[in-house]
Amino acid sequence: MKHDMKHDAELHTLTGAYALHALAPAEHEVFGEHLGDCPSCRQEVAEFSATAARLAGAVALAPPARMRDAVLHGIDSVRQLPPPVPAAGRQPMTFTAILRRKAITLAIAASIAAAAVLGGVTVRQNRLAEEARQQAQASERRLQDVSAVVAASDARTVRGRTPGGATTSVVSSTSRNRAVFMAAGLSDPGAGRTYQLWFDDHGAMRPAGLLTRDGATLMEGGVQGASGVGLTVEPAGGSARPTTRPLMLLALPD
Amino acid sequence: MRRTDPGGPSAPTGQPLPFGVPDTAAPRLEELMSRVARGDKDAFSALYDALSGIVFGLVVRVVRNRAQSEEVAQEVMIDLWRQAARYRPDQGSVLSWAATLAHRRAVDRVRSAQAAINREQDQAARQQARPFDEVAEQVETRLESEQVRRCMRGLTEIQRQAVTLAYYQGLTYREVAETLRTPLPTIKTRMRDGLIRLRDCMGVTT
Image (cartoon, rainbow over all chains, first blue to last red; front, top):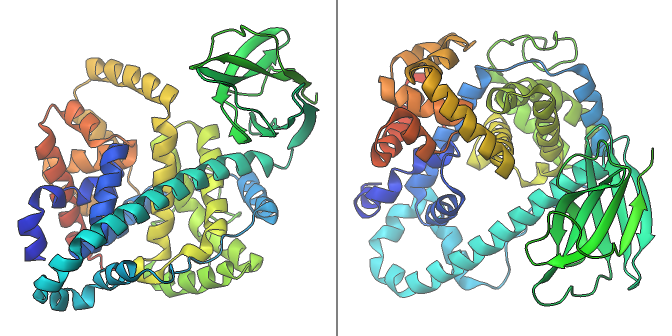
């Protein structure tokens, strides 16, 4: 532990802010990477998280009964993630995994020569693993936002097709006041251009987010008040009002 | 069972609950979690009853808006189901894991672009309206746990505010530094040594 304090005194003080989710996203990322190589920081973060959980316990509040029903019904349509499987055939990762085990930290610290040789590889591997993890997390979060709408008990779906042949659908939930736009087969909007989504508030088009390719997108803004959903091609960055004819207009269910 | 059941459907809605889940419930929660990881819905409903009060209370504290809080808390609970197989007992208790997930989600919600703008405005208004030390004060007096209250009293003023502003109000450490008009490095350090004091006072181990 003293070893870490000496080398990472500056970074080490971030354990508190990290555990309280008080770091800026970029810092959170960098510190997360550091955690992979700092067993004592990891231990401290775990203890701080447990401490924070006590603070959470102090403000516990009974949720409304309808939430229980919504959750217990909600999970019916939610697929559970498989357990993480350790990456096979990646020696440097194995070394990292060993490093993560606190019990033998001292033994590792003693073999500084070995660590120095493998250090460069390990750091690079960690960064790759971290990037992959960040991406996985971002897409997982997106997935969660999207599936929350899709899994809503009052979710309704409408489908349509663009002149270019892309199939699109909009899943909307009045109770969540949200809609998800899904597309398959969209062509590249072209350099300097983007697809833009719109809520049609009975004739008034309200911007609802940008997309550049296929996939599911949580539309920005509430579905309430909208009678339909539109898709246009706009200059990169999007427009305040549609500047081209809609590729598609879908009427939302009443 | 009743006492370890803070989020149960029989608890009156919106009422503060007794402090969390007693430590003796920890092995039970881990056991439940491993059953949940195998797709056991009965285990999940028991897990819901044990954790939803803490999750909902924490989210409400950070997000404030009831409707939004309900939405976020619901997402967190469904997330516990989805990610059950990812839970690692050697990395902390189920309670700690659930609180971390809930806090992360609550913080993400209040930091989304539009919310951030609103919050900055709120913050500016608040700073003009009243001295900063009332912010954390108000939080503290509403804590339901005697132990947490007692341990909070053991912190220095700045430690207490750094921890509560970040945790209960979801501020970043930069925002905390701004609110308390204190240099950034000091805030980082106070968050850490404040948590160390709380940890030791509460006898937290992992």
